[in-house]
Every structure is written in structure tokens, then in C-alpha cells.
Image 1 (cartoon, rainbow, N blue to C red):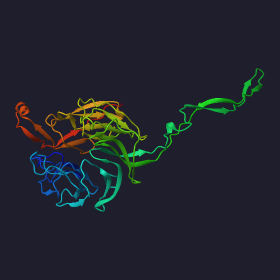
Image 2 (image 1 turned 90 degrees about the vertical axis):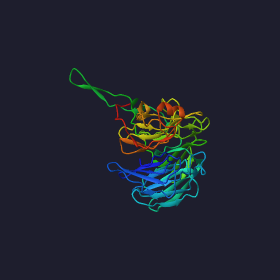
Image 3 (image 1 turned 45 degrees about the horizontal axis):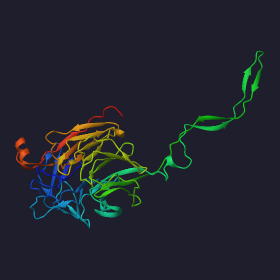
Image 4 (image 1 turned 180 degrees about the vertical axis):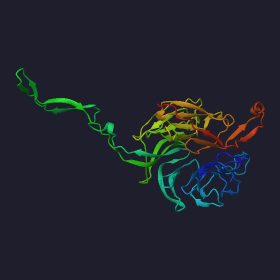
Length: 417
């Protein structure tokens, strides 16, 4: 990378990898925009954001432009005159052109999430709103009020099935039966005699069991943003984008949970992975299933000692497996990067460990993005080496940044569940 950074924005526009902002080796936020073509390499840094920023969201619009929203500006150095301050702005730029369009948000926004919608708009989730950005207009044109303020939550874009209330399995008079009892009048059977004639035997109407015909009912579906947890929050909130309304699920997480990650499973359920307990400040090794009946149930054990928070999730395009990379193991006395990824097979039946490149394993605060169906990439990274570790590793003590893009190929699907 021309400039090593961490907590930057990253994404793909056409055939270009685009990295915006982040903190540099001096722990200052930067306005730099870095662009790389897979066959042509890095372009010199010639464009920049209107404001230095880090911890922002970056979304590629359908026309190839980039939308960056919120984040912080300032320095992480303890003696810096300007500590990180949340930004109340967004910008739109083209990665190969100078300049950007500056947009005011009206309030500072950090710890938020963003989703590209099928119609090309972008839903930005954070603070007290879901803001909808329209690239045709170049502005945020709608805001949907949330039931709870959200920061450091996780969210997914979800096409969810809308079931009646109560759900079908609880509807009055419903029973699960493989056979149903019906009254049927049987025909006269003819029995031949020795002389060639026949006699008839009339059967009385009887009640008999015949196989039940199963007709799967069809239910409507809605495009929603599902918002899970956040700082001080154990609630789940569902925002209907068509009707611009929000409601809270009656089911809640076991406790307030921040910095989790979530993905939509192949069967339509949501898998929530890890996170940081707001009560203890420690990362969790648990997961949970969330479904269209608005219920929450335990998911597969992650088999990660120390748990994981702020990880990234990807769904395998071939077999629907959920792949987890990055994140940190957080304890009250120590924070370390998670050096092993996880693949949860479709339905959560199997769990595979995915080792990361050894030289990249110690770095955290990385931005994981999808390059294509089979590859994901980790951008930047931060690591602090104390004096004792520096002697053991024969490196200089202090802050180290990862200035290499690490590309990981997803494993080929193996067998079935």
C-alpha cells in the first residue's frame, strides 16, 4: 500500500480496490484515497477526501462512485491536541477523479452501518435513524425513526417472510397429521361362482384413513433492515423499508451486546456471531439464530477461546456456508487479534477452522471486504509491540501497521451437512 492505514474504508468499484481515509502510522486520521487495479497495481495518491476521517462506512454506488459516511477525525496519540471527534458529514467521490461532493448529516455519526439496497439507494443505520441516500438526487431523501438509539450494533439487509399472528404452528385448531379420516362408500365387489355366475357384496360406508395432501402455504415477504444489539442494547429492531416503520421484537438477546456480526443463512435465518458483552466488556464465543417468527435460539459454538468481537462475515456463494474472519478477543486486561477464521457449514451443522497467513495474524482493526465470489481481502491493520515482545521478535517496539493487502481464497465446498 502507498500509505499503511487501519480502520479505513474499503471496497471494490468496477475493477478497482478503493481505500479511503483511516489512521496512519502517526495515529492521525488521513484524507488519502488509495486505488489499486489488480493487473496495473497501485496508482499514486492523487485524490483525497474533503475531510480526514476513519471508522467511517464506505459503499460503492451502482454507477461506480463511492459514498463515505460519518466516522471520526483526529489523533489516537495520548498527547494529541485533537482526540478523535465524530463527524457529521458524508462525501461522494469517484475513485479515478479529483474532488468530492460534501453532504451534511445534521448530527455526528460513528459506530454505524450501511447497506446498498436493490434499487441503488443506501440505508445508513445509526444514532436514532435509518437514513436513505438516493444517488440520483445526491442527498439523503428520507429518514426512518428508530425505537432505540444504535451505536456499534450489527445489522443485515433481510428479505424476511411475514407470517400471520399467531404463527401457523400455533394457529387455533391446527394439527400436524400425516393422514386424515374421511367417510367413503366402497363399490360392489363381484365374486365368481363355480357355475360362472357372480354374486355381489355391498360394503357399508366406512371411515378410512387416506394420506393427507400437503400444501405449503405461501406468505408475503418484505425487505427489512434487522438491527441487532448495540452499546447498552439487547434488543432486536426491524425496519420495514417499504412502509418506513420500525418495531422491536419481543424476544431479546441474553444481555446487551455490541460489536457483533451477522449474516443471512441459506434457509433465511440470521446467524449472529460473537460480540462484546456490555456488562463485562469481554468478547463472547457464542452465536444465536434469529428467524422470521421473531425468536432467538442458541447457534453453533464458535470454538474460539476468548471469543470474538468486531469480526466480519461472508456467505459462500456456492454452498451457503458462513465464513468469519478477523475481529478481536477482548478481556478486561488484554486485547488480541483472532488469528483463525471459521467456516460454519449451511445450517450450522459443521465448523471448520481457517488459518490466516502467519505474518498477518497479529494485526487487528482490519477492514475485510469481498473481492469476488471466491476471495476476500483484509485491508490495513494495527499492532502494538511492547519492549519484551520486540526483543523476542527482533523488531522495533511501538506501533506497527500492516501495509500489505492480504487476500484469502474461500475453501472449496466439501461434502454436505
